[in-house]
Length: 362
Ligand code: PEP
Ligand code: MN
Image (tube, rainbow, N blue to C red):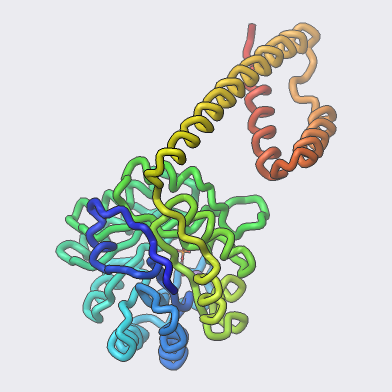
């Protein structure tokens, strides 16, 4: 693989120090299952040479009864990967005890899982246990789409003096059944980037997708958004994995994926490029302003309808009409080549706002 990820140099100490020729990549199984599985996977990954080899030792399962990880007996297996294959190793920590054991066994990178980031007590406990270490610590986004919790998790780790910090975007759970296991909600990591511009941001497409066939596309989207790297669950025999079997890919598939993704440049200094970009951006600004104007007009009409209904003492929500209008709008949008899910979300939101406005008393 000849591709190199264009990493902006300012303050990117730990990423810089890795001197990567390839994209930053964490690869390895969701869970360490047996010593043999861990070592054979590491061996199979030698060709792709990930920056870190991952394996979950302690597995937080949503419901009891699932495979909860092999526990600390798996840590020496990771040490063996480190020694025999000269690969840096990574695992998830969920409490102070995990941190203590992981540090003792020379784990190079520790990540805080999505189910832990939701809990400030747990994150604080982990932060205290990490105090003084120069290991790399990554904070996954919380399971729920809450930017503050994610920021809070990062701040807690930062506040004990951890320098080598990063964030992992693994998607957010949602009540609806979706194409994705965890909705990407791309705007949330983009907001995170605004708060911490220098913080490396890694995508975990495996937990976002929950399915193999979407991993390449999702990874490419992230790289197009200037993410700094990927964490991809890789298993020798994905279908028989003890956890997350549907989303893991084989080492061969990982090689293919890494060859297929295209690494964009962070930016270009070419004058013609900048000029063209400026023109298109002004065009977007005009369209965005028109959208606001149209929304304003739409809400004014909603207000008039609201008054009319109040005068007649008619219920505000007319499910009949909404049930007929939405499919027509979706069809129209589809004819124009717009994404169905996107349009549905927008109109649902507009409808809720419209109801709110209609309920306002004159
Ligand atoms: C994992 O990386 O295997 C894991 C449990 O991830 P998450 O915390 O994102 O669910
Ligand atoms: Mn997993």
